[in-house]
Length: 192
Image 1 (cartoon, rainbow, N blue to C red):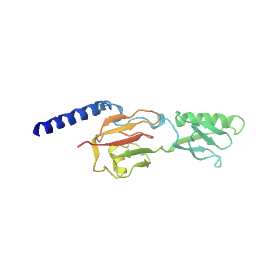
Image 2 (image 1 turned 90 degrees about the vertical axis):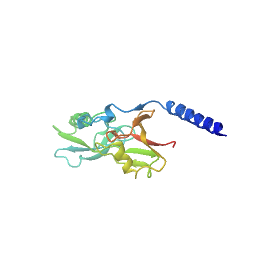
Image 3 (image 1 turned 180 degrees about the horizontal axis):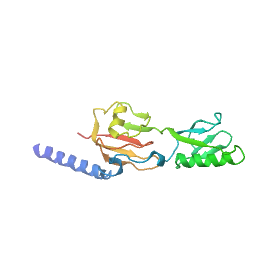
Image 4 (image 1 turned 120 degrees about the vertical axis):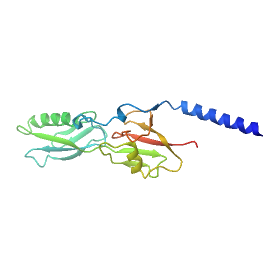
């Protein structure tokens, strides 16, 4: 009986080790662990973002516009302007050129991101779902936003899938681990 218990425990450890190696390595360094010093002007737009566009001396053309599912921003008089994968400056330059093409004389435009696309969190958290993104959001803050861990949650590793990618990456959960707009975070279940 005692040997059978030892054998069962050894088999359980072996299966756990095999399951761990099948999910890939745990990342514990890299760009997600460095303070985000990226310039906001380099931020690439995607579906779910909103930008505020001001056309000087034309209040009816100014407003807050969302990036649609097709990746464009629909602006008054000129219609859809490609936005997905571009910076706000590139979108504004494109819109300014289109307004200058016979619609407005010497148009002046400015723009900024008004709302960043949300992040998503699922798995072993109390309130999984979609939440608004805030600049500098860490994975621990994201978990706190989702009302914390469930009793079965793995407190050491989280899986994150970047928007537009198909594979999840395993990250060591530390206070420095950053979340990006559009990320899907999955908190797994611990074994013991």
